[in-house]
Image 1 (cartoon, rainbow, N blue to C red):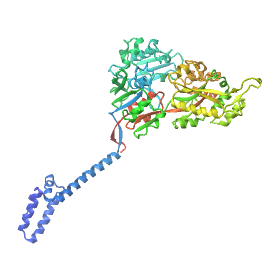
Image 2: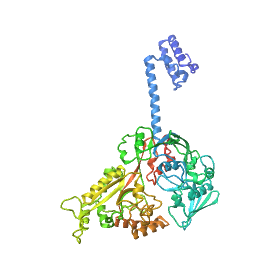
Image 3: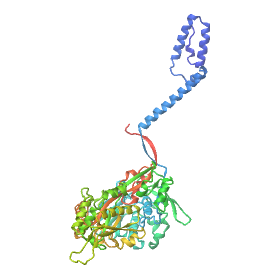
Image 4: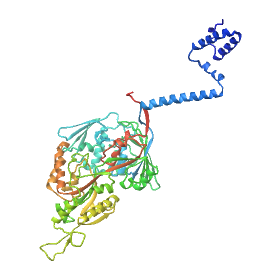
Length: 617
């Protein structure tokens, strides 16, 4: 018999050729033995070699070849699908560096300088370009920024800060204690005309060593840490610029800071106005490099133009979306980020312009006659929350159980009846006649209600006018243009009742908005009313060393304010920030003190992602 062992290394084609020739020479009875040996020989190597597989097409016809190719492709595709599903199931998307984001701002920058900035456009850019000793995180909590830590003495008048190691300006120079001293002393210098100068009156600053700085206060001031969120400017670039001409320096437009982003470029129109402003992420940022490589700002003259640009995909976001435009944006690609904002709208009373408002019962009737829920639903589409005092949700001293009486037309009418204001037999408004003077003229109950010429405010005035006239109070409306409201109305307190929105400086507390010493310009108290108890509570709050010490006087202050009906508190609107759904990060922010605070966690924003295997698997 023939031995097949010597052909064990032959190719598949040679093996079959050998088998064919051998069978032709053998008798039928011997062919079965050869077949068995061949099968045995083939089974010794279960996996065919590459040289064997290459011979396979020679033994397949066209239909078989097609079937084989299809089967092979299905095998590859199935394997890939299984592997991909496993990867997706066992991996998670995470932020990745890269990409860009463009945002529209209403207004234009002029002083991109933390110690000079006053407009929203300037503050927005300052937030990204500069860093302070302290900063707010996405939860509105104060955390160290340039500082690695700080200590406060028992009297709460001495604050000591130590700087982080390796801090650098955008131009590569080191950030030092000298920069801190230069910044604070520049703010205190009246020639700079810094709007923050009053915050540092009586504050002494000195260097302890190269990385440690000390602040000494004349008396305790609990919000002092929040003041130190102001950005630091580089001494080595500013020291040679005269203070009286600081607002003219080119560094106000092409700034150098130590924030998460650095200035890259800008463009101007033919008139010299800045049209766009591009920032790039700072590689050596001391917290963590921002994920988004570039942020491009485009500037618009009004919100209508900005909203149009957002709808036309010219920008990825807008700094703010007024309520009247919210229903116009229906695209599913736009996400509305609603932030709690320290602003409230109220009706403020001025008895100096209408003596009827000196009577608390009359003010009480007016308060009962305002349908706040209707205002919230019809004007704001429910985009806000009703309030009962100037201390808003999320602020120290807020008490959800502190309630005022709800809209009650019948009770309001009853109070006016008791005050002697009666409805005439014919006529829409209440009248009163002096009982002791038969010849005295009949007085008609009336009040003038003033507001700024803004669509939401005008709608609110129409509702209040309808409410008050339904209880017999003649209500005249005074709509004032935006450019005249401050000078002609607010500064001179030239109004009887004023509908106005106030943005609260939570660091200063309620003192500047409600103390009687502040009810004339330049004070911020718009209710020209005075009460000793209210003033006493505010003095205690202002001088308290800790937040805990403020709680009781804050409660009593609010109770007294509501008892005396100093104002009609309407609502706290939400701040709506629209962006495209490609942007991630703003959704983790919930509370902002200023519009620029929407960028509190800017270095965590991203537009690109990558997947990594889940460490739990």
